[in-house]
Figure 1: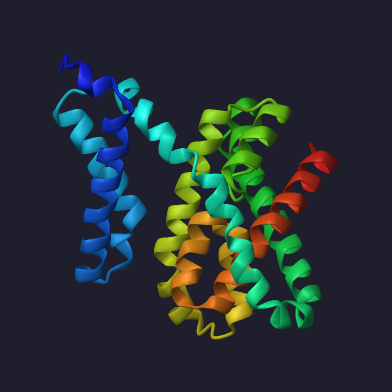
Figure 2: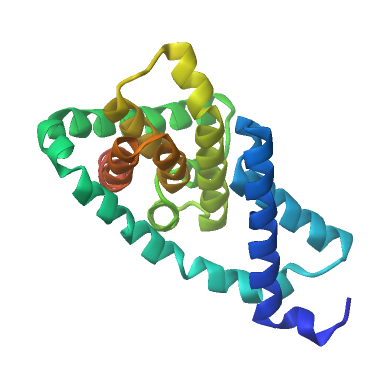
Length: 227
């Protein structure tokens, strides 16, 4: 569609907000893990672009504006962490241990599967940081010889899966400890998992937010030591 207004930033912002608003309404009505707002909004955005044959560059002009809020939104997690500081002071050692073990398992399991599937090194190093937040994953992939774009896709998929499977796995494993659940979500599913943790409770959200940073540090350490 060769319309000038499509190439302005207003289009990308408007489409993103509308799709996410519809996704939130759908999530409330269905109450299903598969109706994850981020997943549904992404599908809706892609569907609109394909149906109207709108080039991605037209959307990205406005979509990048929305991405600017990622940093402030992540920093805002510190507010909830401060509110739950009395919990954090009592559980700092289990949190460190959980983040260290979780990040190591993530890196080791990805490396093992990549070797079993005989994937190229560039793809392997792109997938290794899949459990950390996007800025860290992109930098780690770049430093180790991976492809940052593939790392971003892997981060998105792992985050969505963690968010979708969080409650079913919680029920199946009978995991009631809010600290353990928060650390698990933050370590395995970074910021997307943290949004789900915040839905489950303030304690879960606080520990998940803290786990994002700690797991990012441990993942960087494991890659530096072993790769």
